[in-house]
Length: 246
Image 1 (cartoon, rainbow, N blue to C red):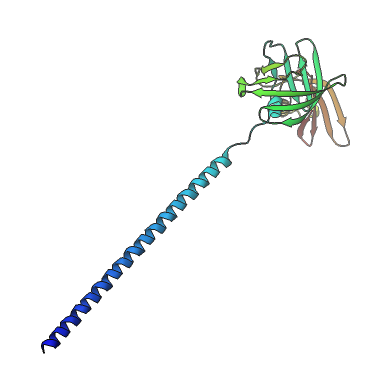
Image 2: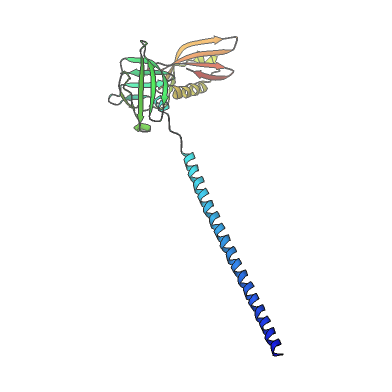
């Protein structure tokens, strides 16, 4: 009987040991799973943070604007001599016009290389001489400075002050009667085109000549600008609308 009690007691103790071991195993497994989950979450968070940072960096780089064009800056305005305001320079539509206030020099050009701060030009002068020129522009806006040692009037230039809107002058009633009498629309068309394409002009004067195409019902007139190159603008009226070309 005593042996039986001891056997039962030992069996009970063994069961308790097995229960404790199983409980410990479950706790250990739970801790391992928690640690694994935490590690995975941490790795995922780190990966997410890294990916986001990389994406943001890429976005910032992509949002950075491309460098500007020296040729576009050269052609976008009228320039005056850095030391003499009577010296003027314009470059537009493949033509360079320089004036010292008395003499005017006209050359043709083409851009052979272009970057943000400098551009290479092949300049053909009126006598046929071809010159390879390098133009550099530093600064922005009114603080810009142009330098080109192959120009004739001056080497150093700064932006010429703007004098306001382009004025359209000399238009008479006879011409207006041929184009629907709409002087406001005519002024707007000429002013817009000249301000965009002839940066050195402040006035476009009607030349007094009109060309009629009765077959096409078209009226064409010319205006001369007061820029150094005396740019001639052609204004066509057809179908009740104006179109302007240079």
